[in-house]
Length: 68
Image (cartoon, rainbow, N blue to C red; front, side, top):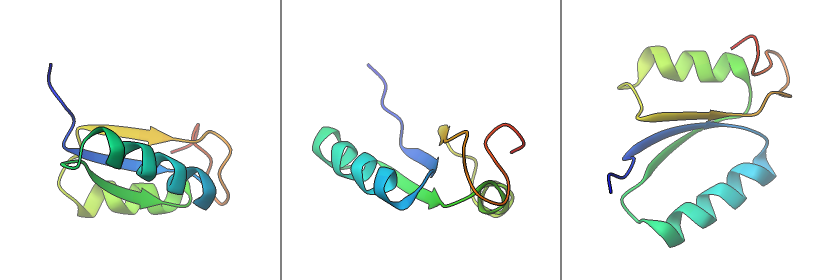
């Protein structure tokens, strides 16, 4: 079974903390880059190495998940 190495997670702070905690228990090799809104997600995707997975909340401030 293949595992994801790089994840961009765009969500609010509480959900980011929860996801990071669960991911750490599952696999220490995850690299999770976080964004609090859609604009930060776009900035990260332009400046970072492409992730294996992007997880985003649909209800984010400034730019929501549908627009991002």
